[in-house]
Image (cartoon, rainbow, N blue to C red; front, side):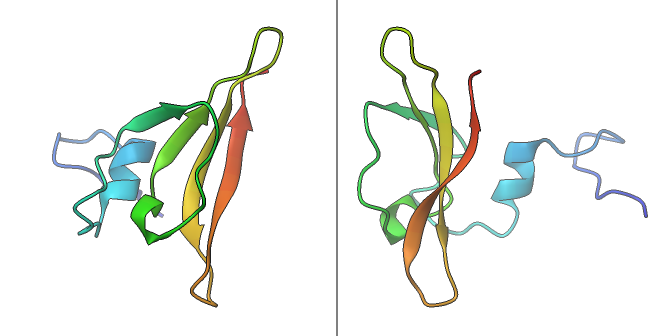
Length: 82
């Protein structure tokens, strides 16, 4: 299967470019936001990437907010810094 190619020639799309496909939400910027703690998941944060910065001696954690089939929202952990 040939991967979808972006507008920049033959280069595959980056992770954030894949997330932007079909996004019409005005709040979505395609940028990673840093927070001390996650807010309550809601449509306002849908598709947003958030890094929760760990305190001294703790790792940072990357999350995204996704909608379930039941129309509820939750933060899903993507990875940690270590």
